[in-house]
Image (cartoon, rainbow, N blue to C red; front, side, top):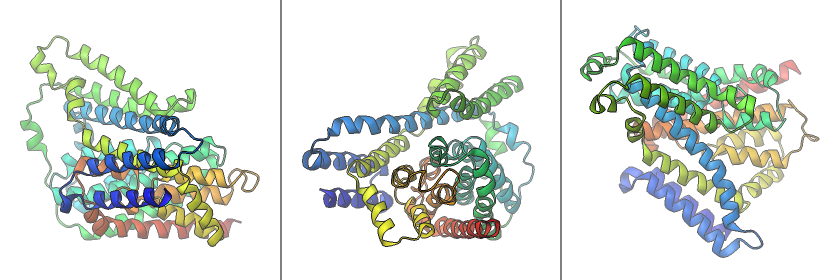
Length: 426
């Protein structure tokens, strides 16, 4: 059974990677892979366990991520429909591609720590469509956004789901994780950003004329109201989670609901045709549904590997064969580029107790860095990468060729800085 499920996952993974040569949408490959993995488990290896019950448990976590993604994407589309991002893009006066690399990179890095890497990626990719409308430039900037968003999320307890898991689990504290990982995470972003800044030349052509031709009738007051309401809704999510301890998607859905009511009131006096473009109904039609289904397929595939114990067995074998905790942690980070980092960190939390490695131990903090940034090495290795892949139709092998090696260099350099910092301060 284990061998069959592993083969199905590998074949499905290859089908996703070879989406364009095969001319089969990656969402279809992901959905088939996920369902087949669970089917084999249900028919051949469930034993005393109820696969239906297990799937229901995992689907609760998966649904939380999907609803969060849908809510955040809808909020961003609603802001964009009201031309709200002009408030930011109008303040970015430079058209120099080199300067834009650093502006986009630093905004993404620090915004990701406040929001999270997934939401930040959705927002920044939307901004890139105005700042860098040329497809070639925009893809390169999108790759930078993925690296910067994952690096920025790694050093904040609310910036990445794995760091949040370790924080909630008591393995790390907020103050310590920020102090110990902010410099390595910054280096992880700065090195690729420097290389990209050396690759780009000339000026970007802004999309101002295209934006004006869209004939928006929203006035400045409406634009400002919706923009700040949207940003406030996204910033509210980590606060809501901290106060209520409810999943992040609840905060996003609350924010979306409030925006829905307010935008309906703002445009209540307009006729149906005019206010249709500014409605949540229109925004929901514009979000990339195939990307959400792709996300669903990937996550249920990973949950099948977790339910069958494949991931736990892999972690145990690494522990027994490698032994060195630093090498194991870096391997987990690189493995997270192939397999979702959430179950990997969950497996590590189950393998190593707080008695063995107490709160704020080197291992937990290094794990937070590695699991948060290692996924940037492949386009489907992180939530940020999957979101950007769906929004910009980024090809798997293009990312591997153009961005993956940059992410790997940044990851290894940041890890080296983390280890050096550890040795110097202990």
